Image 1 (cartoon, rainbow, N blue to C red):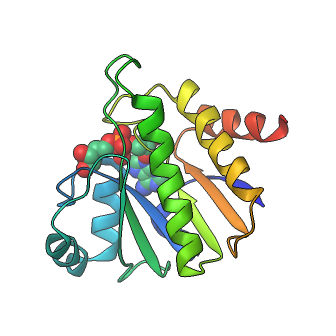
Image 2 (image 1 turned 90 degrees about the vertical axis):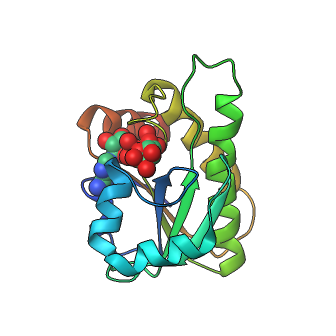
Length: 167
Ligand code: AR6
């Protein structure tokens, strides 16, 4: 199933919480800052040991003080107008998180609206892209039976709901 949740991703009781990180993995503002604050300082140490992550890829850590089991740190593209490969890179974020969750045998995952804050990706474009990638992934077999789109903004949540009702 695919669900939409309006609220704070750090509170969700899912197997995997996805973080919208930057290539250093050393924390920042937005959802990244909220996840680091809620998980505690051990998260920064775990991220430091990983040593970074390219745009479109994912790195996993424990979730420390979050109710989740794992945090998947993915790095979305910075929006530069849309003709610099941004859609492919944003798709790659969702795909790499879903594939890793499947490899780990996780059954639930929550995504924030990757790149839609500081990185400036228009959410009107990012939301349909995210929904399409997840729907396509769910046509294959995996243990992942719940995907949550978690957002802070009612308009973004409403667009997710709308996209989910469309074929
Ligand atoms: N729960 C759910 N969604 C949230 C939360 C939360 N606690 N906090 C923010 N959002 P952003 P980006 C939403 O800026 O655009 C960081 O500094 C927010 O409303 O967090 O990928 C990193 O270190 C927005 O819709 O991520 C990078 O440098 C969405 O999460 C950079 O920001 C993503 O906004 C990444 O920028």
